[in-house]
Image (tube, rainbow, N blue to C red; front, top):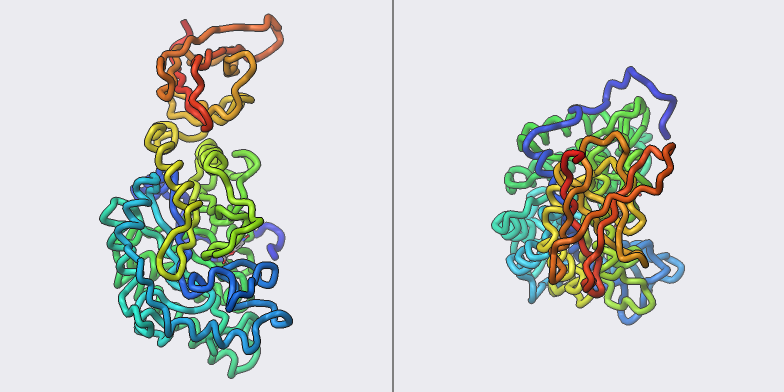
Length: 460
Ligand code: JFZ
C-alpha cells in the first residue's frame, strides 16, 4: 500500500513523459489485439467434460481450480498438457492478416503466462514449446508474421509462476529462501533479455503477475533490470505494471509519478472521464466475455459483447486519448471462435470507414453531445452517433467565445453525405455556450453507430 506522498523516491520512474517516435506511435495505435494462447487454451475452461466455471478465476486460471472441487490429482494433468500441445490449425500469418483487417495497429502476445510455460524455446527452462510435439517457435512466428503486416508487437510476460520450485509469493525470509528467490530473479532477467535478443523487433513489454510481495520487495533488482531492458531495445515501451518503488507503491510511485511509459491499470474497465487520467498515456485491455482471457469452449450463459458495444468502447477510449486492446483466446488447435471473428470483422469495417475518427483523433475540449461520442483532430470533430435524437439533428455546444465553430458536416456512411449545419440559440444571454445543430441523414445507416464529421472554421 502506498504511503503518504514522498518526494524523495529513489526507485521512481526511470524516464519522464516520453515524446519520441515510439511513444507517438503508441498514442496513435487506437486499436490493438491481445492474444492469450498457451496450454490452458487446450482445455477451454473444462477438463474431461467438467466445467471449471465458478471454480477458477478465469479460463487461463484453470490450473488454480479450487482444490475442493478439482478433478482427482489436479493439477498434475495440467502440468502434463505440453506433452500433447500440437496445434494443427495454427497459422501466424492468417492471424496477423485478420488482425490487420480488423484495424489493429499493435498486438500483445502471451509469451509466458502464470503457468510458467514458455511459448518460445527458452534456453533457461525445460518447460517450453521445445518440449512439445509442435516444437516450432510460436513467439518467433507471431513476431515475424505481425511485423510483416505492419503491426507492432508487444510481449506479455508474467513474472509470477505457479509451479516453479524457486518461486514464492512472500518476500524471502530465510537464507535458503533468499537463495531460491535470487535464482528466480536471475532466471526472470535471463528470459527477458533472451526475448529481446531473439526478437529485437518488439516495441514493448507487457508485464503481469507482479503483485506478489516477493517481486514488490525486489524493487532494486527491477529498477536495474528496467535499465537493462531499455538499453537492449532503444525506444522500448514498458507499462506501469512492471515494478514497485521502495515504498511498495505500484503503477505510480509514492510521489504520484507513473512507473512506466503508460498506465497499465485499465483492465476491463474505462476511466469515468479524462480528468481521472492525470495526463497519463494508457490503454484498456478488454475481453469479449465478461472475464476469461484464454479460450472458453462453452460460452453458454455468458454475456458476449456485441460489435456495437466494442465500437462504442473503442471510440470512448479514443475520446480520452487511449487505445482499446481487444482480446482473443484461440483454442488448442489455433482456431478462433465465431464470435471473435464477428467482432473482428465489425471492427475492421468500422476502422476502415472511419479511420480519421479513430487513429488520428483524440480528446476534444467540448461537452459531449447526448447523441454520442466526440473525437477530434484540431480541424474537425467526429461524432460517433449512438442514439439518433427524435429531432433528427445532433446538437453541438461550443463556448460563445470560441474562435472556431462548426461550419460544414458530412456523413460518409449516408447515400447523400452532405449535412446541413444550423446555428440555433435558445436566447439565454447568460448561457456561456452557443449551439449548432447538424441534420442527420434522412436514411440512417442501419444497426451500427455511424460518424458525422464536422468541419470547424472561423466564426463567420
Ligand atoms: C491478469 C492475469 O491474471 C489474467 O490471467 C490475464 O492475463 C490479465 C490480462 O491479467 O489479471 C489481472 C491483472 C491485473 C488486474 C486485474 C487482473 N488489475 O490490475 O486490476
